Length: 122
Image: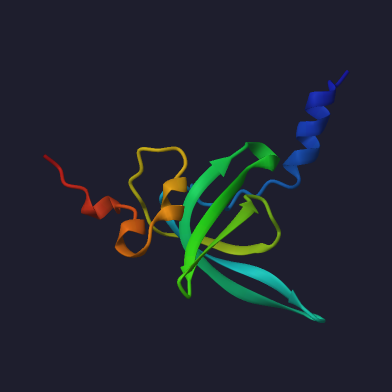
């Protein structure tokens, strides 16, 4: 007899994406998002910093923040969403926090996250 949890895991396997890159907090990502306009679908670029990851399995989500025309824009995406056409990590960030909500109150150069290359080795 199959338990209800095993049945649920088998159903979720169909919807999990296997080609998603490993994201970490502070990484800069570039993605192409499918946008519905009238009767056609177009690809819209979205590039920003990952400030949050939460959940696991089919319910896992991540939040990306970018500055657009001087205004901060945040979007939350499910990892397994069919709306995401492509997802690429441009540069890795160094973060000692689980959530980067402090970036919301910062402007200009203060809102940058250190990159892996910028780290100094003693």
